[in-house]
Length: 147
Length: 101
Image (cartoon, rainbow over all chains, first blue to last red; front, side):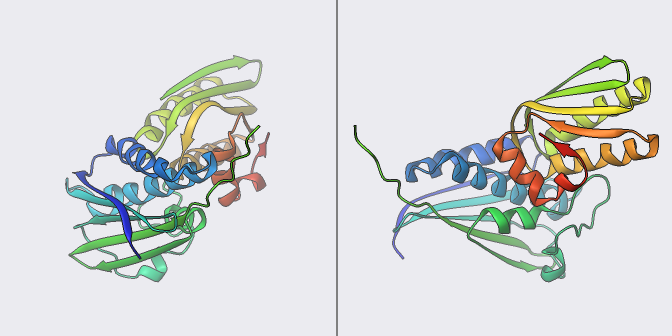
């Protein structure tokens, strides 16, 4: 799998950066000429992953979120979103729709959205060390009709 | 992020605009809840007409208002949702709780 293009960014886990993060990835992904629906899927999945870092990984602490986006040969977008926060004790449980460890109005649908809107998602985590979410989506080439 | 409230009889409409995420949802929630408290509507219309993006934080926003309205014996109606918003809502099964058009 040849990486055609890549960018890295790190940002504070502040909620004000949620919109910034999804806009950056969206701008990068635009190189693959995605449809509006594909672009919205990517933005939504990124928003969920970044929000998880802010709400769950760092809780009261201000940590950093590390984002890598790659374009892989064949029109595949790979996004890694990593934190060095508290980690997830039980990944399987965390991936269960509607499951949430925080009260308030979190719907517990973050991972369900990522799973549904992207082609694949991998979660690796170590308690006390942090979590990495890797998501992939293939952007199908569009047929251009002339005239 | 903005919430514009209009009241006609027992129908209260909250016109939402901007992007709904974890960052903006709290402010929207406060505005809508305070308007529900003062107007006690029998129907709340959440109009997503001005919303350009929504993640699952919007689901929490809708679910929370749905629960409040249930306690008041009032109904919820969702309107103006873009295809992106509708996709997130359908994933959460919102179409089973409220009328969406």
